[in-house]
Length: 151
Image (cartoon, rainbow, N blue to C red; front, side, top):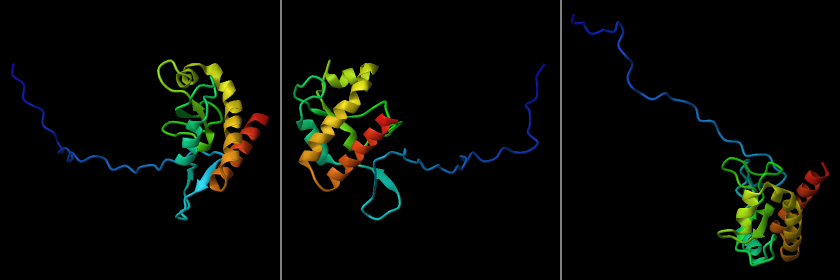
């Protein structure tokens, strides 16, 4: 027995994609925020290639060997998140490569307990080296660490 094809009573709408409003991503709240120099109201995290070069020049905070990477703090104080990196003032020197201290920090959760001590040491060295905006960011970062550790 042959069947007749079904016919619609009302035609289908055109195949146009749905128009949705895009939500603007709000940056995470941290103790280290900066206003853009353009005077815009939006704020951004502290970034400084000059400070990161200095951090990479320091010895590794784990083993004391030559560091070639600036590791941004992870896993504590909600400084990072999905697609967000901690501010550059929260970076510490680590050696990089296969079997390195940088990999060990990511692989072993017990390394999280050492990060505040390593950061304080790195920030103290940076405060001796820099002045101006970088020093101001380091002072804010140190105050933030002390506040978080006291809580």
